[in-house]
Image (cartoon, rainbow, N blue to C red; front, side):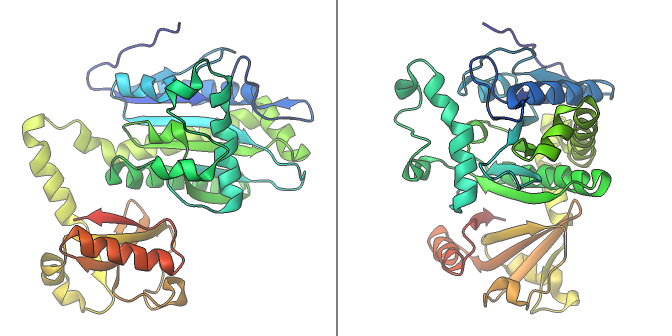
Length: 347
């Protein structure tokens, strides 16, 4: 039994989850063991955050112990944490692939990403009474992922913002190869009630990258970039979180109204009028740090593309609907065009 600290009033609480542990070593290649690298890197992230003002760090594990997958997000839920961050290492049978990638909860079905989901969820089978605990969830069967859902769209957007910051730091500051931000149905993220990400630091199967991640220098550098992204996330978002309850709703409304929404088919002088008359629902296609021409082939022929620029990211939306049924039709249309991660957002 592991005891976890309760959150302190006014603190920004981050739960750090070192992947695997104990009887579950995770990936092992060339003498590099995932559970050890994940733990050492995670503890370093916590040290950096603890040096900052108004942070509280809680760990799912601080030593080489086995923590059941179902209990990892429970730690964050129990203390109403602000963020859940799970740290892992990747591997494949081919020794050439390299690069970092950060996952958020989602339902995409690309083959390579699905393999990551299977690998990270497979720890379920090491737990006692896993059939009862996970109610038939089988990480080896893609169809079982259909039951997973994103609890809050806002959490997903915030997760994407954090994940993008982490990946940008890895690339810009450490010149690490990036494999991007991806959405996957990972149990540990689905069960968390707050924004969360799962970071794959790199491939242990790539001997050069594995050597870097296995070194104290590599772990320190990677941890620094993760911590800096979390610190930036807090600075951009925490002002609203610490507001008193009686002013929270009005402040949230002001923040939403201050966002800039742009429709390529309208002039800038009509932006405010267009937004007020737009539908209650839109379909989010993707988030990127690079601005796209709304008439470009990137949107695969879809019309009525709008976007919001927020936290240094562009969020692109398709269509407008006043009810959920019409919104679902728009979402299905976007998925038919190839936007498999599209989802409905309410305004």
